[in-house]
Length: 348
Image 1 (spheres, rainbow, N blue to C red):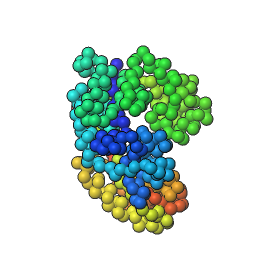
Image 2 (image 1 turned 90 degrees about the horizontal axis):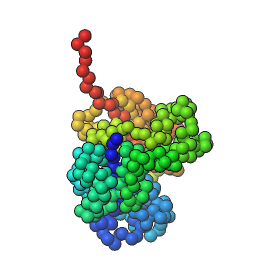
Image 3 (image 1 turned 120 degrees about the vertical axis):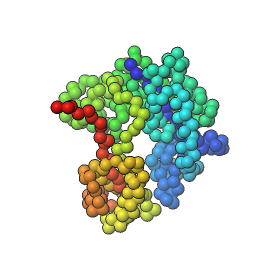
Image 4 (image 1 turned 90 degrees about the vertical axis):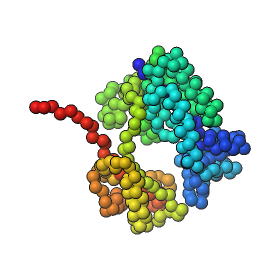
């Protein structure tokens, strides 16, 4: 049985800013872009969250909820440097680390004998080291698999540690809300609730065949996770699945034609980003993201190994028609082909 630790730095960008400027510690702050440039909240501290502010919220809306909110322009170079310090501490425990972002990672400590082989003690040591040496807080979850470890790290936030031992899995998962399952967003949650499914215990009452009929392939995953099962290994190398770029405009693009005029600059930036990949992987499709003035958004995709400007324009036309209103953000991207797996061929 695996021993997995999921580590998550609490309100990471904000934590770094509060560390460097103690005057920010007890007041609501948000990291992100300015209102003038129609910025959004990248993250915020807990005093700001008390006002209902959260990541991806438009900064203008955040300031309406909390007029005395302090907005801090992010410093990505500084955050990356701090993340390197944190991950160096992780590597002192185990080489099996799967980064999810700058501030989040899975650690497989199944074979580690230090700390009497206790994953709980390892998590405690990591949290203490990060706090003392880096000056920020890490919450951690300890469990036999990635699904449960990630849920556990959020269970006692902020500055929390939650351990789910093997013998406690069944009782823990039975009472778990289906909204805690990764991939269950508002729409899926609504569909589940309409079926009377609110907890994993409710999910267990549904046969696998019926879940697949209603939710497709995700129905199979719902059935598996309802019992707390997750066989995914910690992957030390993550395969890039897409490359994209997007732009939020200072003024809404009022018409489809104005969106078309903005498209070439986005495609040029996308091609530059793609060219920087070493080596550039194959392309298997194109996508266009459209966010309208009312903050509804849609993404249109099409499989094509060699998408061109006309292909992107066609996807934009479809996306625009879904909202048919002014646009605040446009994005374009490539879906990337999976790496070919080496295979030993038979002689005959």
